[in-house]
Image 1 (cartoon, rainbow, N blue to C red):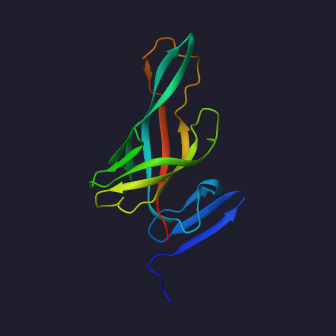
Image 2 (image 1 turned 90 degrees about the vertical axis):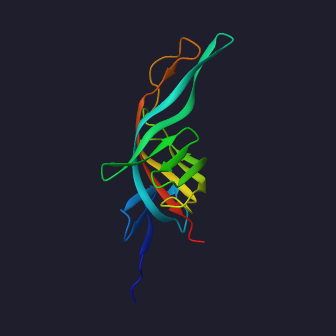
Image 3 (image 1 turned 180 degrees about the horizontal axis):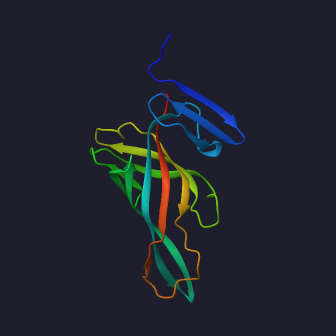
Length: 169
């Protein structure tokens, strides 16, 4: 018996490995995966995370405003990611995410890996996506000193792999 799309899931050392006939094999950390996840697309993102300096009563801190990134598949730009976060594909489909789980990045300078539940708009590749996993994050954090002037913006470089998922239900 042949299946159009094969799904294999297994846990190994805290990770769920998911492979599909038409999507690249990726290893989603167990804390960010759910049974029945089906991969729609695996897309790389690169750009910056934007932070703004806030000063209040002598204290200063950086507030994350959001990403400004492009999405790439096979080297071609296929969309963008912006504050929200909102992933917008060039085909007109988009998803808006709300973080529901996170684990630390691989190093201190890497932002968290996260799972977002999503709402979709439009038709196209991202239509029907129910979750996005942000993984294999690199950089994106502010590692040196506090902010000095209210309103300063900084944008450290940031890259990640985004796995777009549909629920099996």
